[in-house]
Image (tube, rainbow, N blue to C red; front, side):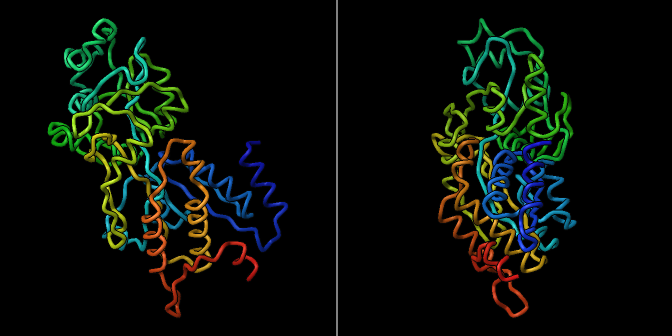
Length: 354
């Protein structure tokens, strides 16, 4: 029995009936390591059986639209029109870096340099070997080490917000990519092999010599994958980390009226990581007032107490001002008497009233 299953069994057997509440989320694999840790922590502290299934952004969007989960996770934000059509609320939860990762014998972390145009040509299949002249021109110090080894592309097989942000970035830096491939939760990859989720891509990269793919930075760290330096909009070669993620997000203009829709790729800034992404939570506005309070109490708990877990997995939490904007947006949902449903009541208080 897994630790998570044992935890759920313990809670279901030991918690009083009034506390036997469950919260189920599903969606993006990008923030899954953090979300799953948050769910375990909340379950232990609040007596709520909380869980999060890493099934991909596309599946998370589908499940929340069909009211199959209490909240969805997506790295591709929905536009205002789609939110309104499906009676959904959306807000950012975390920010992180998406990074290319590779498995090339003798080449290690931050030794390889790439720019957006070259990265696009690799994933379009125009650059097929690791000693291609374009790679040698970017990496003259690796001229003796880049091998005559075929490049194997690894991409996502599921509908993925990680793919959306990666292809959005490539569409901004490469006209050829934009015109031939475009952006989306999935695209028509011309070559390569696939993996399910960030975890599946990571496993493929580890197994295939000469491979290159893209994952969320925490998976690169957890799986000890090599990543390159990537040239940003200012022409600087930078690493993916909390500092370069914060730099990319520093100029973002968040608008609650637009569902906080914001894309952070290819942001300006000397130290900005070019493939920075926010990950979003989707909540239905037509659920019961009690469930609405419980879901948002869970999110509020994570805003207040989740920073250490987020930092451990190399994510960046939201600025305090943005969190206050998000909390204010929660009050837009009113009960039948016209009062805001969200009123900062903790779960324990709600349960005691039942």
